[in-house]
Image (cartoon, rainbow, N blue to C red):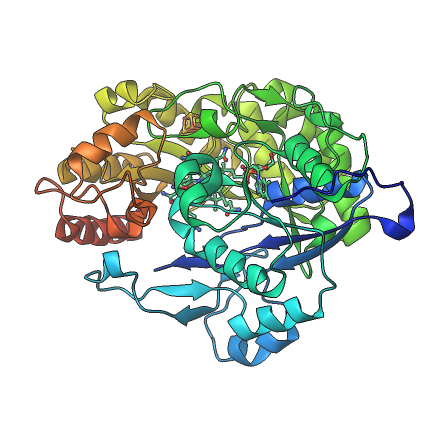
Length: 466
Ligand code: B12
Ligand code: SF4
């Protein structure tokens, strides 16, 4: 790939044009649980700050008028504070998953509408494609194939979670010209400058998250929620989690800057629903959530907040629980993962049963009902027996909360990936499609798919009477 090495003169008329694309999801089941490509939107805002002209194509945004006839027929398309099911086009199973008896498909915009949109776009100088779950890589691959057909000589950058955790795979098979790993606000700008010959000097300071421009939420059409990140990274090191490969070091913003960001979305886009994407939102609440929510309550902003990502149990104090209730926290998920004390310790020790019991008490005292307190439990971990998952479900319900089962996802570059590889019949290392938790890659005779079905029914049965 030859780079344009001449430095271009800064001038609004010849600002370089970058096309940013959020790809489709290829999976068996996908639901928009407040999913936005926040990383790509951060990169977009940095490029914009550096004078770039941007075009944004979001394969998961179904507000395209051409999607109307397809969405109407879906009577189940309920929207809950902005989250909703996604449109699915059935596809053949990938050959390596041919024996899975579920329907594989492409979620998001219809292919022909994507092509129509692509046709309308003036030739960009650089194309940036994002990626999320490792096993969703066929989505970015399809996008890269199509943009390469349309604009064969335009360099394509691929970044995001798949690109960070499966770099070699992406290098070999994605068709992208450049693979960027980890947080990439500055590296993406620098590479785009090299490619386009543009000369610009705005850079963020990764140690000061308030030096970042707000993510370009304005590029997202018809959204009634915004995603917020008050921190990056996490001080814990759970053995099944990849956060330290994606965002090393725990860094936090100033709560007043987060508050200003909330007001910004409210004023500029009329947004009232806010979704936290942090890995470690509830940690040390006295320096973030408590003052932030106090201000929201004081100014009577009438907002709703959601934490689809699990909250740290240890951070939930009586004061925080009360403020969460008063300030409009509607969707609560807390991360217990297991009630088995040995497993709690060996996987990182982020919480204990005593802390969980206390946390549920504080949330009840604040006003939350059993159904409101969603608790994530990890099931089908390597070597886990179904009896252990069942007792975790019972434990959660006994303490007045509602269990949500997350089938274990083996994530490359994590300590648990090694155990998963040993305990799985699939080649997890070389084929990211096998990392999909829908196929339960770590099932074994001590925890089979039948056991899983049974405990899922038990969960529903027990929760009904709770
Ligand atoms: C928020 C979040 C969610 C949200 C939704 C997020 C979304 N947009 O879809 C919710 C709560 C719904 C969710 C669900 C799940 N999640 Co999740 N989630 C995250 C989390 C905490 C943050 C992601 C994020 O937005 N970060 C913020 C932005 C700023 O960072 P970023 O996306 O990495 O972007 C940066 C770089 O990647 C790069 N970049 C990004 N795009 C691009 C593009 C280009 C061109 C370039 C150059 C660079 C670049 O630069 C960006 C800025 O620095 C990550 C953990 C993490 N720390 O990343 C887990 C994570 C992605 N989730 C994970 C998992 C396992 C899940 C679940 C499967 C859990 C479960 N068992 O149910 C589900 C599946 C969801 C589904 N729909 O099927 C795993 C990934 C597993 C995998 N194999 O890939 C992660 C890594 C957590 C972990 N345990 O390690 N998740
Ligand atoms: S506490 Fe959460 S984000 Fe932190 S390491 Fe553990 S699983 Fe990952």
